[in-house]
Amino acid sequence: MNAFFDRVFRRFCRRGRGLALTACLLVPALPVPVEAGTSYTLGVVPQFEQRKLFAIWKPVVDELSRRAGLEIRLVVTLTVPEFESALEKGSFDFVYANPYHILRVSDSQGYIPLVRDREPLRGILVVRRDSPVKSVEELAGKTLAVPSPNALGASLLLRADLDHLYGVHMSMVNARTHSSVYLNVLNGLTDAGGGVQKTLAEQDAGIRDGLRILYTTRAMPSHPVAAHPRIKPDVRERVRKAVLEMSATPAGRALLDEIPMLSPVNAFLEDYLVMRKWGLDTYWVDDGK
Image (cartoon, rainbow, N blue to C red; front, side, top):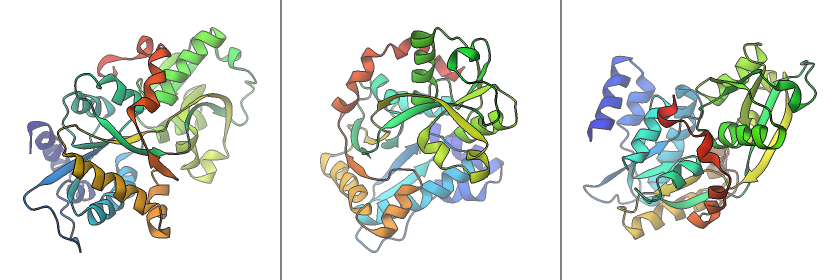
């Protein structure tokens, strides 16, 4: 285990998070032969708070390992900046990441997209349902909660749209997860929040019903599961096929729906290249600060 994963492991242990420890040490009992002596890591961008993230992804990784006949260990970093740092170093063998993350490290690490959801990703701007705000322009100078400064739909693209299309500048508040963004807005801690339609749909009805979508960004291809180029092509293909096969069964679809990846399809780097023309680097924050 490299220094990064060792550090994450020790921090989980010190905090006594049994579920995190289980996932970090995960060695699934597989009914099909497992590649001897080799294990792979799958890093997941922390979209949700940790307990929810593990609850969603641990069963997915278990089933993915079983179908691919590989030992795959789930790794979830404590913060988005730690995730970004690990991705920039190529620490993950496989990764589920913001597609703009993949583009930014394409020259240095060359992660290869394997599968993504057919449904595109759209950023949303939410306010309280009873908010008097009726137009984006009314939010000039107000506070905007985001799950991470570098979240694609919920921050980068949303802030670019507000700036370029409406001339609206807001004071950004880093809420650290999508769930926290929605709670910040619902509890009146910020005037508005950035999210994506998929994560809003994952919230409890009480939260969803208390919010109103004021603006929706342009569509973009969804987060991919991608592989580092050091992973052999046949292993990459086994993982790609395993995800697609999961979607062909009711039980597998139920697991993927939690991500959510409702209808996985093959993904390619070319799917995402158009985003290089959107000027998003202007809004990127190094180290998530």
